[in-house]
Amino acid sequence: MSRLKLLACLLVFMPIFQDEARASYSEPLFRGAEAQAMGGAFTATTDDDLSLFYNPAGLAGAKKLKFRFVNVTVEASDDLIKSSSVIMPMLSGGLNSNSINSLIGKNDYIRIQDVSTFSFQGFALAAIGDAQAAVRLLNPYNPTGTIGLQTTYGAQLGYGTTLAKFAKNRGEIRFGVAGKYLQRAGGFQQPSITDLLTLNTANIIGDYKTYGTGIGIDSGTQVIYNFNKKFSVLGGIAVTDIGNTTFSNSSPSQLSSFNAGLGAKYKSHDVLATFAFDYQRVLDSIDWQKKIHLGMQLKFPLLTLYGGFSECYPSFGVGLDLGIVQVLYTSYTGQLASLVSIDPEHRNMINVRAEFNF
Image (tube, rainbow, N blue to C red; front, side):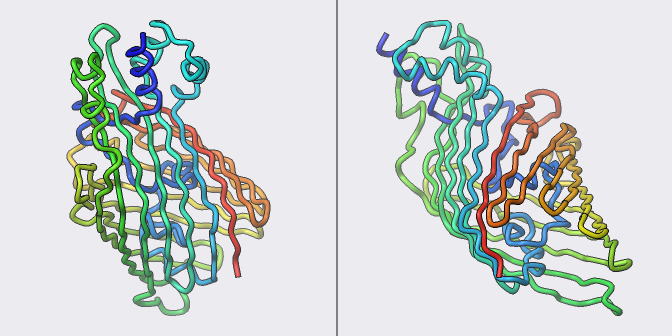
């Protein structure tokens, strides 16, 4: 029974990721609630401090001094939320075969991230802290799958500038670049049945205490054309983690991604409407439907509504602006397999931000 309890604790707290069916799947380091609410389409329309993570060219739009001293996101899969009635008894020692079986075949995933930023006149500096935990085991009679635990922290610095302006204030061409210094420990393992039955911790979760160093570069461009004071169209290209951001230990790399996007913005009185389309991971050999991201934002003085499609699955979000503090809830579905509709996972995100603008 003691081995079963230990295995159950590992399943609850150890993060999972991709098995062989998901070899092409890679989680980005930064996944913002606002972008996910818009289906992940952010390449062309981003224009504040968070452009640092999507397209550094957007930093050219960050003119005012902003200090975002709190930016906490908690993200969890539906399976984790539904399994809470099973997990809590486990933690208090109430364990049986039914409770273990109830976790098999699900993805109990959680991510906690805090990103503080400081931006001014095209520059942005961010401090990053990220922790992920999840478990996926298939087949209760012959359990296989992926288990892992990964923590990442570091800093990212970027600059965006205007290269050229169109005549009569019709728009501009932007360029941006960002560098990141990261420390990462842990990763995602595919333990054998023997490892699971014998509780070989080293093979089940790997080395989750030794940090490795990674240095990465992002770059991007944006083109903005203003038809008038109310309506603008935008285009953008970004390459994140150029050449892959690898780590000096065995932790998984941040894979390079080439993304292209189009967008439009319309402002009338106190309402700003934004429409965005992204074709992401352009060079990756994956289902073309996984590359499609479409989103919309309606921003009112106190309320912001979001909607979209990410990899052909719907997403939505609701944000409240309470002055210094903003709160945003996001619902979206990600596809863990390389083909759409094979292994979808629905996730929920709560983001709380506190910032000063000068």
